[in-house]
Image (cartoon, rainbow, N blue to C red; front, top):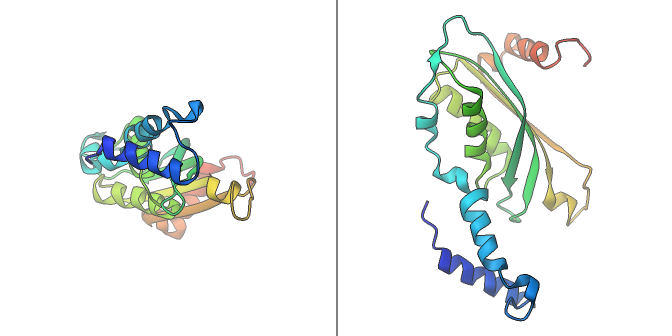
Length: 191
């Protein structure tokens, strides 16, 4: 994704001025336009630059492998409606097809879809679809639990509210797959 940093910097300066905060007259805002552009271009939207198919093209032989679950993956998503962050965690599970992925690959897959201007629901569905389509998994699951700044800091002002979305496909979308997931996520039967 090509970023016109100069134009973006000018847009942030104009935005701040339009809100009555001129960066040239407020010391604490002097470097804000450049910082904002760097944060958005280099970090917050970095998922747009990830080739997911290439990320999932490598992996070890999965012979003898069963369900793989990665829990508590930190997630930050930028809301396309308010340009405010949502933060929380993800659980990603898959039943390997021909390939077994490293845990870092799964974490990078989460970032590839989360670090975009996108909805929480889209992130989970995209992760699941990519694991099946590009990763050859026979089943995939993603649970996201996020707190949205747009719900916490404005509007209803409910900072305690967490939004949970679940996406599953293939063998993990069946009753048997759901039972296997429950066992993997709660092995001692507490829930």
